[in-house]
Length: 310
Image 1: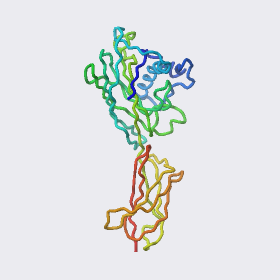
Image 2: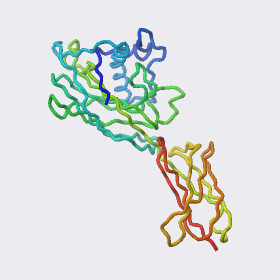
Image 3: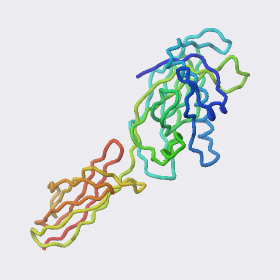
Image 4: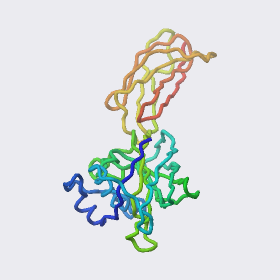
């Protein structure tokens, strides 16, 4: 578990973040925060706000500025620390229209009771001033327990297309390995009463994965053959959205009628379009299976076909 503190920061003007970028190491980042925005979306509003708030803190951290935390009265306070982050390792994406959601629980040690809210992002290079990819986010939540040990439970939502970047790259579906980045926020004494907690207090990083649901077909060249006759086991391996899975190993097995023990027939490799084929021959009537064991990016899947031998 990596837990760090950031200097107290105030909210950057959203227009500055969205049009000019943020400062990184003293230089203006040429790539501003540009979010995928097909229309009004509460998730995007929260995400833009969060990026605006945390940009200066990331910059200060990269410049190794000493962290400070204060309470609502502007008195020095002990910065909270994130004790644990409970999150499943992998989630399955199976729809192009429905976002996946998953719970995350963050436990914060807060001796001076200054931590007010926690929210979470999921993406890549979240420890940098400008992330390269953001695929999921949660709304800010308050603690369900009291200081000094506070528990924050939130739900991260991840749509089929990434929130960031908004460019040609956004057509890449959101699955693979990502960082999970919960951030602790507190009241900034410079803000008016009732303002959104605006003091960046602490953050942590965990690893997580979103896998795409795999789809496989099994279309042998014949389903009725003579004993010892050669035929071709063939099919196609794709993801749920129809995109091909190229260069993947598909294992072929057969199980004779009346048996439960599979026999290995060989392994085929998928082409650039996801198709595979393997010449085999059958001695007994039974089921022929094509099996893809899965990868870091896709789930495993199999499909069987009955082959009659005469």
